[in-house]
Length: 114
Image (cartoon, rainbow, N blue to C red; front, side):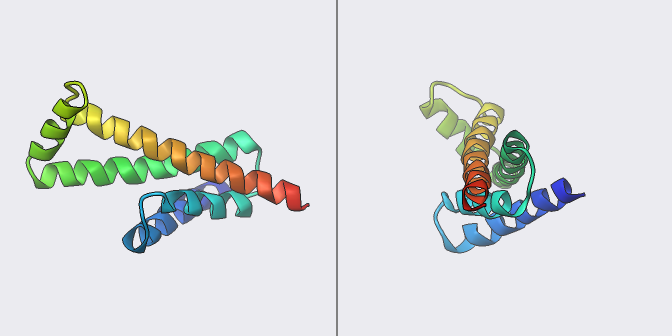
């Protein structure tokens, strides 16, 4: 149950911070969750990574659907001929790494303070 609440906390906080801060605010959301949940470091990393990957993947897919895939196709062409789906997957993966590293930093910081 604590893992699910950490996932929801990270998604909600990242969404709220994303409205007022730059893209790297997802690391702050991951940091808060990592400092709050007392789990193994790799579990905290996976929670943060999956939460932000879900958030960014769903957001990118929604934006892609709103403009009929035109923007994703054109941006994918700039990045070596990627398709829209591949670009959405890359977006989710980058967000997952940033969120996971933020969560891992929060978890390690919690252990450092102990």
